Amino acid sequence: MPETIVESFGEGAEPLLIVHGGAGHRSTPLTQEDIDSAHAALHTVITAGHSVLKNGGTAVDAVVAAVRELEDAPNFNAGHGAALTSAGTAELDASIMDGAGNSGAVTGVTTVRNPVTGARAVMDQSEHVLFGAPTDSQLATWGVETAEQDYFITDKRRVELENFQKAPNPVFQHGTVGAVARDASGHVAAATSTGGIVNQEPGRIGDTPLVGGGTFANDQTVAVSCTGTGEVFITEVAAHSVHARVDLAGEDPATATGQVLDRIAERGGMGGIIVVPAVGAGIAAYNSGDMYYGSASSTGLSTHV
Ligand code: ASP
Image 1 (tube, rainbow, N blue to C red):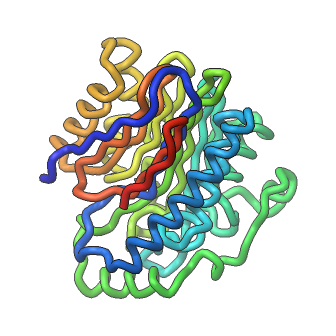
Image 2: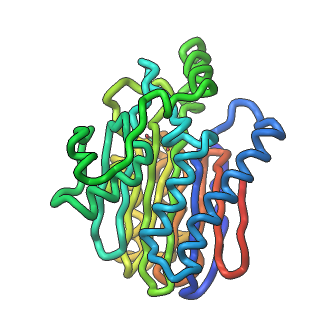
């Protein structure tokens, strides 16, 4: 099992954004071209989210701006370039939560161009929290942009699926994207989006669209976005567990996140968690060997591939 890596970003109550592009274990090292492309994509993502915060925007707007860019980039497992099911289809999940306790999520969507916008529409425009495969008319009512299924499916993902089906290895199935932010008013928010795991059975749903599992936010404690072995993140209620450890056990966010990742490892899972607290340094932590992530604060912008 790889060791747990924890990196901290930002301080005080300043606006802060942290994003991830999925944790996993790479079967072969990335090519230089892949590395350069992932750094460039993360740079675009962070710039989009951080410019919202710099201009006085909300944490919710910042995480949506960042996750939209992550979904648009073919480098990461969400939106365009999502991992494919065993049937070769893209089934997408996303969730969002703000620190006041509002949340929205969609699961099993096949035509929402940016699934995070579907999640946000559920949060802002419906009486509910989670929709499974919303209908075309619901999406139209919410003003959510759609795309043909082909838009989501890239050649790279087709090859990945073919290779996986020839030589299955669950260690190499992962990915997901997410963002956590704190705005100038001290509010936090989290959003997460995914295509799930490579070769998943159609209909399988992981932790990403589940508030408490893959995403959680509370203005008194932390905003959290997870990536990793969905089944274990769900049963450990991973994102909420980070909040609960900070809230009830008084742990600092880095300790709480490390404890949750340790617990996930004990149960045979692995992955990564990004956290922005109400006050203090944010963190990116992972125990899977690799994670794409980045951050922006007053001290600058960083990307990790
Ligand atoms: N947690 C995601 C899922 O289970 C996959 C991942 O983040 O690797 O769908």
